[in-house]
Length: 99
Image (cartoon, rainbow, N blue to C red; front, side):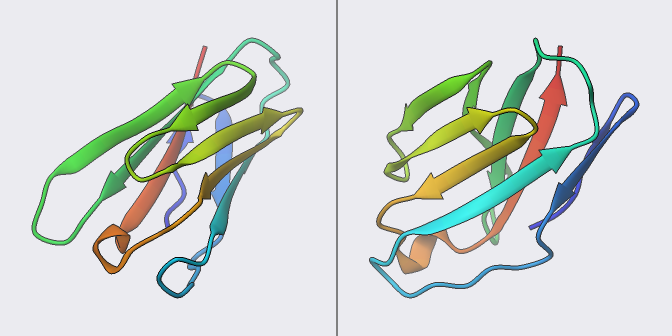
C-alpha cells in the first residue's frame, strides 16, 4: 500500500496489509480534505504489470467486480474491501482524491 497526495489533501494509507487466500481484507484510505464533494479513486499495481484502475465513487458504496468486493465511502474514511482475494491480487493498492 502507499500514500498519494493530491492537491492540498494528504492521503493516508496503512503501509502494508496481509491476508490469506479467500479471506476478505479492508484497505483504509483517510484524507485531510474538508470538501464533501470529492471522488475517491482506487488503483492497483501488480508485479510485472502496469497500474490498473479499479473503482471510483463520490459517496456511499460501489461494487467492485475484479477483484470481487466493494468500495465504501463515509465522512473522511474510504474503505476498499476485497471480498475473496487470491494470490494473484497481491500488489500495491493506491487511493487518490479528486473533486
